[in-house]
Length: 288
Image 1 (cartoon, helix red, strand yellow):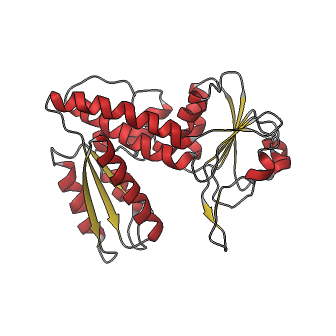
Image 2: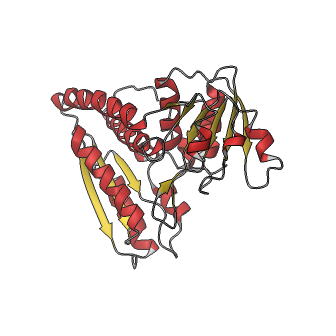
């Protein structure tokens, strides 16, 4: 029996619709959420992502400020722009599209963003709060993965979750979020021996490694929920995930498609964080 598809597009659309109503209420109180997006260079994938984020902002009523600057921009110039945005009262959230061109220090740039405007949730303040179980901005892709599980009634409590990938952007924060929901969590990575063995233990299998179809069907436990966060382009130009979708869906109970799963959710959680930032900066108490 084939798995039920976890429709990230639909879940994301529902979140955006709720935010649209909330933003209308905020604007009636004089609160106008605004997001600044900084794109350095001409990376085609980055340009596409930025366009999607701008579209999402426009759809729900968030002011979008785009800063598209050349890849010849120096570290000092980029940091100066971040400083200006930090001090701009119309900007509630700042997103610097990664990866940055060679020669620019990503960590220094991300750390320059004020914690209250770090809607990507990549800075040390946001990640520290995640570890400490304190309210703060949650990185968008892991947050989106958790929202998809919630939307489909998949409760991590008491289940074994396996996260393949240990990046600061996805793997580590996702593991922490699953721990918050009382899952028993295993993190796997490039040095993990017997990866197949570990994956087969997973009631919830989350994959974010950036290698096309690395997780084969025989690595998926019968009845598992599979969250595929990878996005890869084959030599033929087809977009595929880190999981062999066609094989895995024959064993899983739930599975995200690529595209149409994690991608739309990442953008939905970015605009969600921006709205929370606007409320917080207006003195409204929130719980992230």
